[in-house]
Length: 637
Image 1 (tube, helix red, strand yellow):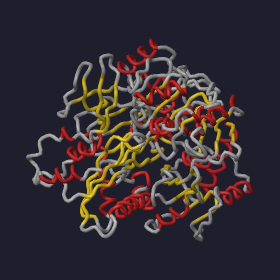
Image 2 (image 1 turned 30 degrees about the horizontal axis):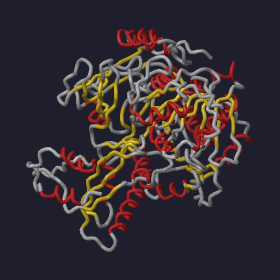
Image 3 (image 1 turned 60 degrees about the horizontal axis):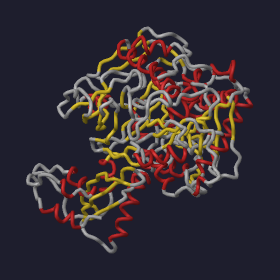
Image 4 (image 1 turned 90 degrees about the horizontal axis):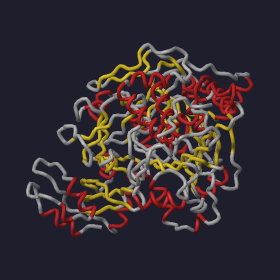
């Protein structure tokens, strides 16, 4: 299929951008009309940022899976929809045509229906990166259930917190998942989580690793057994349930500046239009190209640029179960050559990690199929950008440095591959429909270029979040209350002389570790649950691989035995409460924390100490006890 909304030149970008700002409703309406709707909308946009209330394509009805699958069958039924590259290099890859994926999704939609799942129900997916996860995600969307995919590295407690928040009565999981040389026992983690969640009615288990598990009578069923029942009943086509454009499509939990994860809600119509529009334009996707996004579907990148964006565009999307360094650091490059990958979309953390292995893993790798390289999740440093450009792209492939968030649904600021200029370490220009502004601490909009400020967006776009699940006030206070009539991203930003944007990092108490946002309060709560801990404060510091590492300053009541062992115990506590992704990189035991007279911890000072910027501590005279700083500096790791 061709894309009538694909921008083909720099001049066309500037024209589209001007049109999108001058007449946003007409601009997005023209794009939305290229999709399949069951009923056209009555109103393109209704919004205010005070409540906030945002509605796109109001009154329109559709099902996103008809756009991902059904509409491609007439001409592209035999085109490749999905390639699956397993963790184990000796296991053959799998391929699914659009017809085959359509059949699998319909089949599993019947499984969900037969197990009592209906429109509006919340379904939690906790699985490995396998085709069954994509199929289950799409099957939920087909029957109108709201899916909540939880990354396979989260702990039982983190899962329980999310299940309780969403009141998800249905779970889809695997016996286990492969990740490098490890097997993760997913079902056992689910069982531990469900001790706190008696409201869960059904757990559907996909057998993948042959890991021994327990199956609870009347609650747990095997995926394959349920599929066999559907086949026996000759249940084939499942009619796609009509969804209002503003009905929720999914909940995705993200860390914030408080200890409780918040469920970001995206709706069907606007999210579909925006994810597809940005996929086609940023990557300059061409029909038949293989798109390899290395993210996990448990994160927003996987939702938008493995599943929904590529499939709505009739693209070929590649799922990879493993990790980039196993069985060796050439795995990504082997996959690129094996499947003739055109677009490679990965995280700066992965690039920096692979840089550390030198050029030996690249020997004998052709990489001739590559057309576009992309980065996501965190700002990419210049050294990694140039390595990626020179050794992977052979200076022939444009690099798109994409900035966006779970809350934005899709890419907001990025160059378009080969269309608009790239600049190392800069996300560059906003996409059509996105109106960024920089503001000072008081919310005054900063005009002109070569300035720094807090990054906000002053007009809605179709893919933006609508609420935080079950707590709309939290959505308002987090994103819309800081500055009047603006969406606040939480990021600091620099705009250069040419109007290019460079993200400079979080300005709130949220860390960006390997492209994943982790709230400091969440980590502190986990550390404080350790039996010997009195108090803790967590900050970020520069990390060569992860971009940002986690540095914990911890007060303990008394040190029993080995300090190193206690540090390991605390790290394990964090892994058990949140997941291994949140384990502190450094834990320093301190006698006190720098606090104001009102009792507020001065994380700004701790951040400077962790960074080693001891000459930038600023005024410490307002502290309750300025002497604690000297002892913290003396003990710095």
